[in-house]
Amino acid sequence: MLFMMETICLCLVFWGICYLGTGTDEKNLKSLSAYPDKIQRQVMADPRLGPQVKIASPWVGFFANLLLYTVLLLILCFFVREDGFGPNFRTVLVMGEILNAFDFLVIDLLWWRHTRRVRFSGTEAQPELYSDPKHHLISFMKGILMFFLAAVIDGLILSLL
Image (cartoon, rainbow, N blue to C red; front, side, top):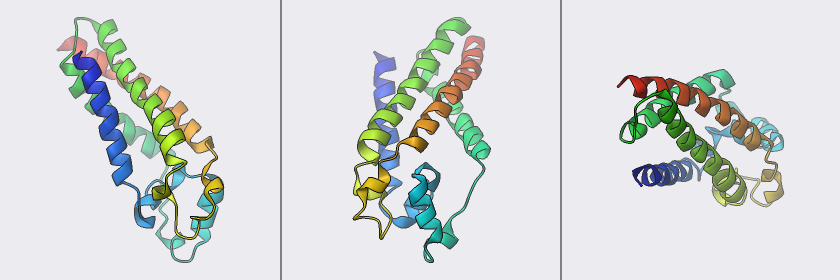
């Protein structure tokens, strides 16, 4: 029961962070790499927005997220830990992959592609530009690996506690 409550709260908090992280061009620029290629090109060519674009290495993002979610899931799963690596690994993996699936299915495919909050100025009348799920699918696939690695690390730590 505690596991389910933690997982639901984690998903809702994650959605809240996504919601609060959108709504203006400046906020939306922070996640430009998640946008379809056409939007990225338009934003980079925009004389007002283009100079504000900061391109980060995908590896930096991957390892920053791995660290963040390893610590977060370690804290959450500490309260439902069991003896041994296997049960702890499974608990962390399931919680992480539920969050990953929620992000992809609910946030990316249902909310993000249809909300005006993620639209850049000048593209509001072209919602079809935001419908390509390619970058979201790639992020989901990376998330599968990232949460697997977090589960291995946390499973080891939790089994030692």
